[in-house]
Image (cartoon, rainbow, N blue to C red; front, side, top):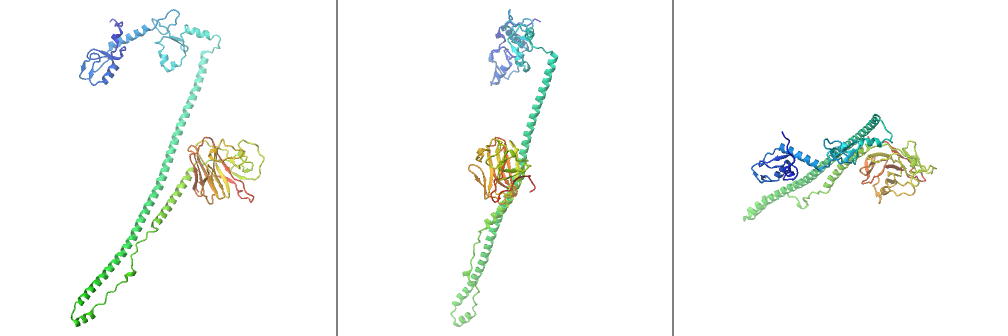
Length: 517
């Protein structure tokens, strides 16, 4: 069978909708041809189905099938059209190494494939990811010979040897990639673990809150019931008293009424003898109460509500104590082991060998100069610093009349006079005889805590939270919130100097946490 003639004009193979060469052509019942996509989209936007060319209407949407013959003719026309517009190789130009038959002009040469390509055969290098990495240059004739010539003055490595070297490098790259993958998998697991811990913390917080608030609600309801009951009982007692008195009064009224009737009846007697005889037989008046001294006093409800509120306050204090105890136990779970750094201690301070105790020695020692050493304040930093997460530790302040405890950022100034505020990088709780204060701008005065023996300090770096606790009383002292922690934090202690009488000579002691207290 003779091949189809594809030399016709472009109009014979054009879609009247998109005006381009037919793509997957389909025929309508009226015999006109369109791109399948074009006619489908056209009918999707119409209410009635008509031919875009002749306007023939169809009762139902026609079932379109691809016109195989026309599709082949259109494809051949497209190919011949593309070849027509591509220039054939002229003398002095580089031919395409892939073309068979008539060779077309190369537009690029690949230094990896060592081949030149026309626009059509270059397409894979513009589409396939691996080929996109190949180095393309302007067309070069006898590319392989040129590459060999270009490398005559360069060191040459045997192909097998270079292959083995590159394979080893590839193995290293693969190992590095796998390590990066594993690190990211670990990061994912850490994030999931954090979410799980956060969920557990949230569930515990909700459970504690519901328990306490439920107990408080029950207590309020009991107090309400007690108030109502007591008021009603007092009212009922008053009503009973009044009812009894009214009955007694009504009885006296009835007796007096009866006597009044007898008196009135006798008063109407005109027979003098009968009157005198009847008068002698007149009954004595009934006994009555002196009502001038009798009164019904309304019940007094003074103190009723107060007593109920006192009971409510007692219950609330018990629940608050449980809450404080639970809160302290939670933060104690983040205990860290910290030791004092002698290289940062003021020359007057004396540290124990284990780095757990410090007190003022009252004598300035000759010590090596250190950029971190405090020169004017009897402070000492810990060796350990923290730049994320949560940490907690406890310091014994028993027998101290003055002390300081807090955290400081890494870039603090340790020389000369220091302004101790969060703005300068210090978050500090100070106690001095009858004063307890958190150093800020302005300072925050706090209620004094009698017999304060051990202070717990908790820091949530990421949340910007710093909290202090009275460990023995299991009471929260103070929390600084919204802190700007942007550098590593160093806990620090200040034992404060002692006076000439030896007061405040006791050491500050970093103590192990005992959660069973």
